[in-house]
Amino acid sequence: PPRQGHAPRPGDRRGTPGGAEERPGQAGHRIRVALECGADATPSVIADVIEQEGYDVRTCGGPEEEGCSLVDHGVCELVEGADVVVNMLRDHEGGREVLDSTLALRRPPAVVVEQSSDQLRSAESAGAAAPGIDANRAVVAQTPVTRDKLVGAIQAALDQRDTVTSTGG
Image (cartoon, rainbow, N blue to C red; front, side, top):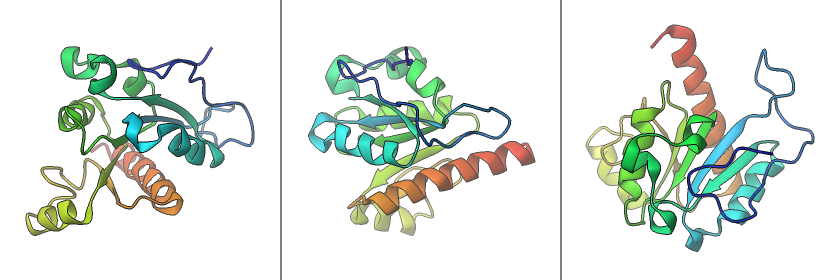
């Protein structure tokens, strides 16, 4: 059975085989996306959009739902097993802690962060990708997040990770 994260939604077994993308050198391996998203943001709809692009998706409701082993203990099977993490918890209790813990765990990073226009304007003036986030550590998907923005940000995060890996950075 597919591996689930620290707070999977009951019955959430996403990632059926199909015309999926594979990682170089790993035949049959679909790119795995961890979606950190609160219930109010319709994670099933967002996961479906990502899956339609050929990715294998696992979801986590964040610390509000069932606590967070990543924040509490520094480990999370969902994050550790993902090729890219999409964090959409910007407006949730503990969401920033989850993001910071994700960024600390991901080496090299392949992280997408959802941010509003206001958050980006304040970050831009400070020279960051998002408030307190280094542009080399995460790719931003600006709200409102559309299919194109989300898929583009996931690919950019994977490209950024691959560049860091190939240059040893």
